[in-house]
Image (cartoon, rainbow, N blue to C red; front, side, top):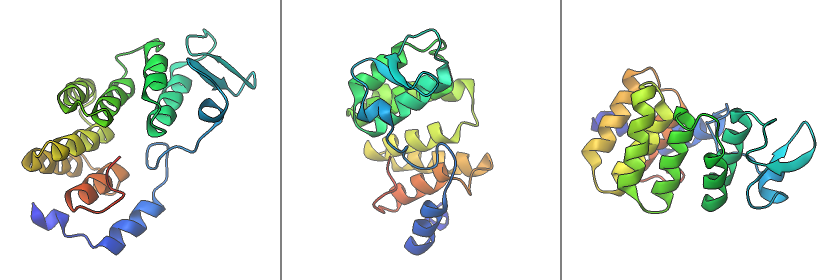
Amino acid sequence: MRALLTLSFATLASAAFAAGGDEDTPPTPTQTTTVCEDNQVYDEETKSCVAADEQSLHDTQRYNAVRELAYAGDYDRALSVLAAAKNPMDPRFLNYQGFISRKQGDIAKAIFFYQQALAIDPDYNLARSYMGQGLFAAGDIAGAEAQLSEIAARGGKQGWPYRALAMTLNGIKGGSY
């Protein structure tokens, strides 16, 4: 397993900066975090802040808002948007329930949500990466390494979830999200 973790800092850093895609890097702040208040999400169609439970919003818009708010550290607002999801059992929402719980220091609750997401979609490597980061934070290095191996086994060795968890296991700043 340690052989998997021998990637050099330069390789990891360049790979991290080269990463693209909607879950590969922290989201760029939008009006949801810079303008909207409380339980609101910025709606591109109406060019205004609307209530998170607005019927015209779809869950992908809510998910993007949850992700943005969670990364901004605005966990209460992220949870209020999560509560408005039409499909709260969507693995993406369960994953961010875990992310928020982990960031708030409740690793056991975070692991519960990650496991729920993975029960629905075992190939959801971002949930595996976040779970591995939570296990690492709790001192379960073997559990974190097992998640890294699972990500690799599921074809995710070139993706950000693998790199982020590998950097966390190697103690490289910027690996933990």
